[in-house]
Length: 273
Image (tube, rainbow, N blue to C red; front, top):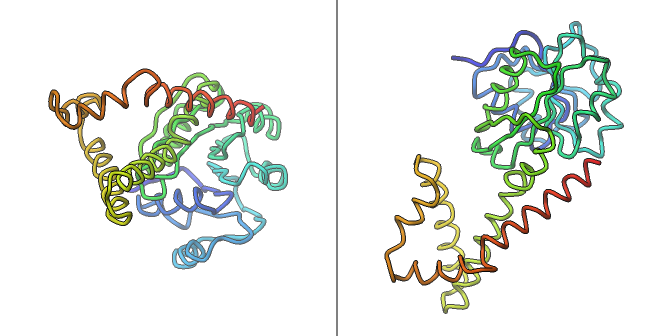
């Protein structure tokens, strides 16, 4: 079934995340005639997509009707410059869906009319390949229909989970928002360890890349917990077991990851303050 919305969708910002969402919506069959984009200079690849689908795009827009949903995908530092004009387009039936990092619901509410429906979401970069995970929080003014609409729009680039407490967004940011960087670091470290074990650098990098990507795909396809998948690879007293005894020792991977996530969550809270 094609993705449908009850009115116009205004996308504010056509950068990496905005562009990923737009591609996902079009892939899901959303009518391009119902989409308008506010961006002064979309990147060339996205500009070609806009032109091919006849999607209106401009630095400033005058709409004949107030949009059903406004998706805000600008960089946080651009919000003060961009949002005042956008706020005028938010009608009483409009839901504002933010994918802007570090901007709280309150920061949107103060720019909008009283009672505005606002959803704050935190997608991550794998959304660019349709494999993202997004956590979202809706304020009290979001109707069930608006929440379902936002869920459908976010699902176009991956899975979606909802939280009832906005303060949890900082932990979400620390786990899934920043998480891809942790996985890339794992691939870096695994490759470097391979070099130190005597492998040629190019082969070590290839082995690490494919191992991380393959294990991720197994995790994606399986319903089993990560711990079970780990145990399935581990023979008692074998090579994997020897390595895991190091990684799982006190001060090892779990302790380091716990400290890393805590540090990222603290920083997320500081930036949103």
